[in-house]
Length: 346
Ligand code: DP6
View 1 (tube, helix red, strand yellow):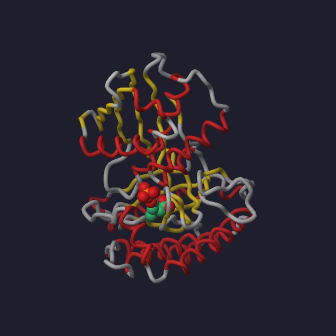
View 2 (tube, helix red, strand yellow):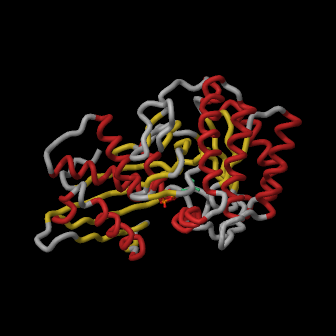
View 3 (cartoon, protein in one colour):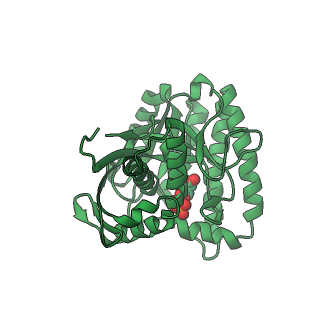
């Protein structure tokens, strides 16, 4: 941990949603509850230096060593938004240095890791400035709430393992305001999971989440989608408690295909699948049927495919990728990640 009293550093991971958040209202409140797995290797490291300022708030933002105007503007907008909750931001100069452990356009959500890292830094700064220490549970709950205001999916990244965000009937402690860890023990099969991200294309732009969430406001299938997501999250959590991988896989894949169906049927529409995405999906399904290997796929709003599997299947899944799937990956590239324990203060 940094010892200088005006420097804070956090490392925060990305996450991959299995029940998708797609559609929001009000101040970044989700239209349905989502569930995700926090990653281990895909992380953002953010260092925040802060000094009192006589001339009001100032932010200087560096990404991977270089001043980045675009990100800086986003961070300023974010600081303006959270000022009501953290009024001290108005009286400080911030120098922020941020870097990612994973490349761009890979199907890994950098907004989740970067916004959660930023929220964690701000909260640690608040503790120093206001000379008050939050109790651990309260710290992370508040960090999740603040991260949500930056990016919805970032709210889930402040916890390790399995995380949900959004109110879920019969599950106490779930909330639209912030994420939480699962309130039950999962079957041992689902305790340690792998995520192999297959890079089908880095060129194809994903539909920005703000555009996507907006499209849901006028989507003809929106209400049916929110009902389906509610059914899916309940059924998925049951399958995780009893260790039913078949049900787990069919729901996870249904969620990914639903997200893309919603994109394809929105106006304007978004066709983000590439032929490689489809080839991988078909190969995964046939490999699972013939070898009984427990793996399934999911996608975010882009063409790259995540393979989700219990970690005990790692060797078989990696062999399958090398033998059959690598041909569909751009320059043979894929990223080996797994479930992680959540953010870390450095
Ligand atoms: C498809 O969290 O990026 O990855 O709240 O506007 O920042 P904003 O959206 P964002 O949306 C994520 C959408 C998704 C599914 C998910 O992560 O749940």
